[in-house]
Image 1 (cartoon, helix red, strand yellow):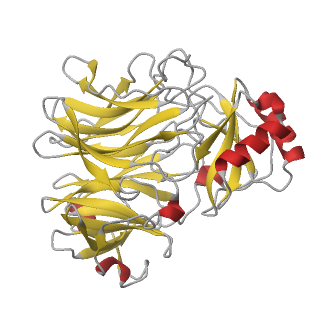
Image 2: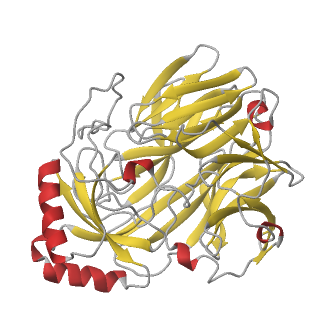
Length: 451
């Protein structure tokens, strides 16, 4: 089973950021440690409630709103609600974000009239606003569109035979462009998920159309990350290509999809970086600060110069807080609770019940940037058996059982897998060879992934 080497909103090779850069980074974002902003409560006339500026998540707990003049206001949602992720704003509509909780997530919408919480049946990611004030987000196997005016929700199933759909953006009132994970050509769907492409959904005709034709073969993969819609209807995105067996950081590229649906490369990127949005007509980037342990925002003054806007992450996950679904706990038998609102799934694989979650034996930390994934397993029992065998051979390595709910970007819906983390500094290729030599029964079921 070959897996994409870059996860949604989890950046690869964090320790290498900045090590191979030709860009000049402004000093503003490095002048002060993260977490020193003055934090205010979210009030009806706050920037968050009005949906102005570019919002970003700081440390998974607060929302920093950056204005076009690089001014910042920082706000805190109510404590204890969950980890804040993937925040997006629209003037007049407010600010929406994901509340990542242990188990099913929630999408929260803050407006000048109050806060609306939309409970979800599974993991939610990357909400985005439409020009007319509707909100869309991904549940992995399908998209949901919510209308504030009617308080109704519309479901969009992923394209036929797709593995998943994520990072949707509106390119008009009746058009959505999203990243679709597809089976790698030449391999069966049960073996691979090696290539991303952009697809367009026509809301009037209720029909998907494929827009890009990226290809991958063997252990090669192609990943599309952080699509951002421009005012002219075009979409810019980061493209990453690499090999599952290769060590080191893969090449990153900036691409543009025109309004006519033509994709073209804009330029190579000299480091790992992801789009955060557009502010004052300039691109804003997420760049990870290894020394500070936080994402920072940079506005693009030119292709070779970035100006710091301070701490925060937009469209990517904060790394300084644990994923609530991956907190350490004692391994127990799973319990199953009926979900009140079943969602369309990617046929023919069923979406696992969000409450049927494996309990990880350890939690990923910044000391680990890669792991060895073993799968697929049709049920939890053989995955737990594999876990026990791997633990017997690698007694000190962090190992956990995952599915598409706890690790939606490396495990397809309907199956289970085991991930053994590889310590930072170790050669992933050598670690994989050693793993296969010591556990030959998993020779054809083990691959290197980033975590």
